[in-house]
Length: 107
Image (cartoon, rainbow, N blue to C red; front, side, top):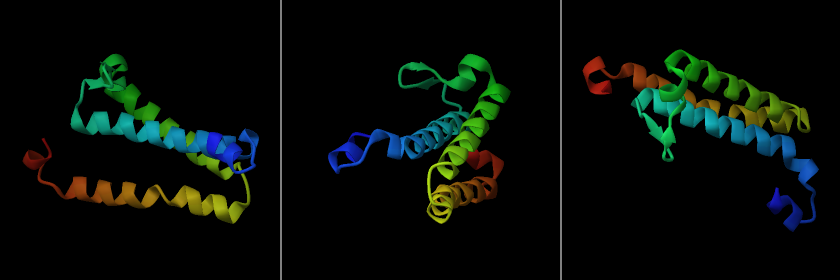
């Protein structure tokens, strides 16, 4: 938001996009901790460790949907749809790669 101000914009103009990107980022961290079975994130108990695996999975999914919704609410539809599609490509690639690993290699 400070970047928007630095180039003559306002925080209000970028708030929804910034919130959407932050939600997507945090969702990726929650899901990463689930996949890697990490009990700690930044010195604190991970979401899965603190609340349970199922709750962490739902929280990550909810944050992903909130992020996409925020992006879609924030401006010209075509530009926001393009921004919403961007994180889906690497997520799909990661999911395919993870599913292709033999179970013993995933741990």
